Length: 136
Image (cartoon, rainbow, N blue to C red; front, side):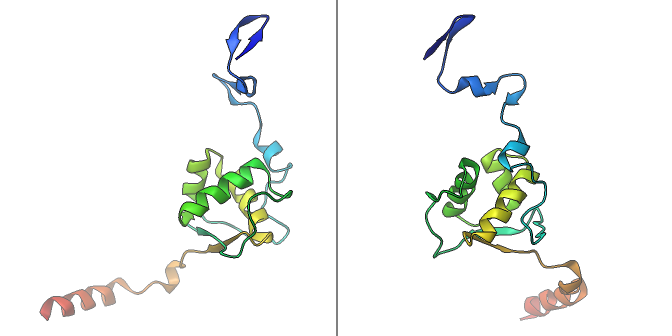
């Protein structure tokens, strides 16, 4: 606990959090002012699945900030969608997309994009398959 001359003792680190406003570190500070992921312009859908690369170096690299390490830790447990990572890391989706772009460029994660609707099988064919299986 630390003492503040203007009020009661506070927990260490609490000076970075305001109960009414939330965290005092703004999203642009976490991303270095960037709003788009990487120079390649990769776009991460909310349902895109992020997997930690098996041969990826550890999380102790100098290029990784605390938010990057939090995303890597979440991916280490299991493959997660961009939306799940955003919720798990308690970060805005836009920030997570920029940070994932960094991790993708560093070779720490891989991203599998969702199948476009035009490539999904026709519903009629799926119903025929189900009916055929029921007939067996």
